[in-house]
Image (cartoon, rainbow, N blue to C red):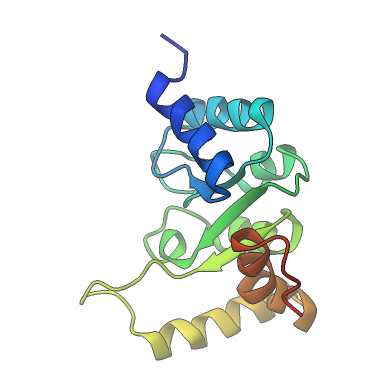
Length: 156
């Protein structure tokens, strides 16, 4: 009916009370936007948007950029969405270079998917094609995940 379920509201309050990161999971775009609104309304909760380019959610880089820059909102850029063709290389590059609080991940692990060495080499190539600086690479691969998990601790 367009409202968040009461158990989702309870999870938001639980995450706030226990200072843990709430994860969107594979939600629709509308569900994700409602979750973002609820987290913003409650305050004091860090939210990770999981694989927002997946076909269920379907966010483009431009839509993620339009969400704004909030210290509590983190956006996963998953290489699997590119490998599976759910996202164009340019859209991935735009997320990596323009979107706030990006957390780069692989989401690999199935036997038919690339192994770690191939993923690392592809990532290096993608970062270069996107024009990422060493500082931005460090931010999306290390600093942003650390800040998301423990914002009070300085990751440097």
